[in-house]
Length: 322
Image 1 (cartoon, rainbow, N blue to C red):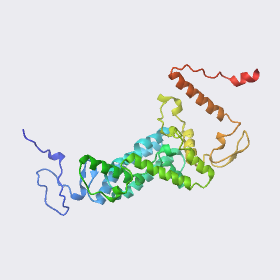
Image 2 (cartoon, helix red, strand yellow):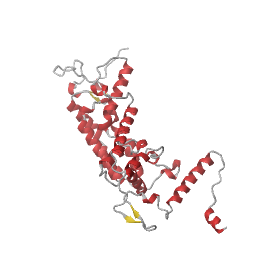
Image 3 (cartoon, helix red, strand yellow):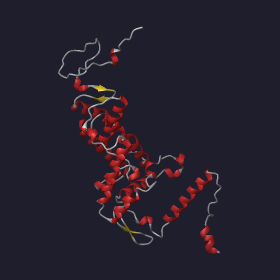
Image 4 (cartoon, rainbow, N blue to C red):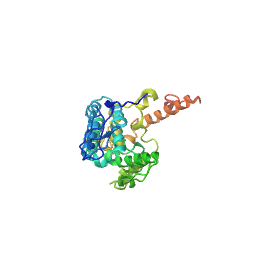
């Protein structure tokens, strides 16, 4: 039994780019050194690497983002954009190809994702700080739209160090890897986001803005961002488009109404950022929030076989009548 080479699955390249000799193996095509690609990773010249990344990265991106922009369900569209078509789509190249080879392509990719996010959310990131916050991980008050140009170097460094460790060899370590503070891509990206959040807090122009940025990092404050929009976990995980867009604007400190108006109930001024809706004493918001928490807690207890007794309907009215 002999081993036969399948020429259709093989390529030959000379490591010496100046070599003009043909392929020494019959029927195996010759690939120029500057165009070498192995397992989907471009290993040739910078220009060829950039062209390869652009072709693979943008081949279907426009078609997908256009469909997401026109999707009626803003929450589902943004969820798909965040987990399937944002930085996740570029992770392969971030971990295998130095950013210096495809910087312009990374900037273009981030710009396309930003445009798609703005179309889905229904407002633009006019304030650059809003966009910086949106690019943070949800646990730090963001929407998870991480940028490739910010996190690519740490991803490449983590991949390089992991591969070198698995091989048991000693390689010449690039400067971009030496400057990395963590061997874990997850930890390194989180540290980057943490520094950006700290800078946003430091440069906040008002006390309200500073407090808003601190408040949204509390535990579970971003649970609605990462929640899967499915009724499998209850109707609380599904948000109507206008409610989702308003919640996103409120989280990013963007205006939720075009101009200040008087509250029709208490006649106080309703501010552009929507704070009044959370504190107006003459609306049912406080009661609604109370009831939703009550019902959710009651559901947890019921599923835990604790037999909870939920408060009686119209209990306050009954007390007043007595």
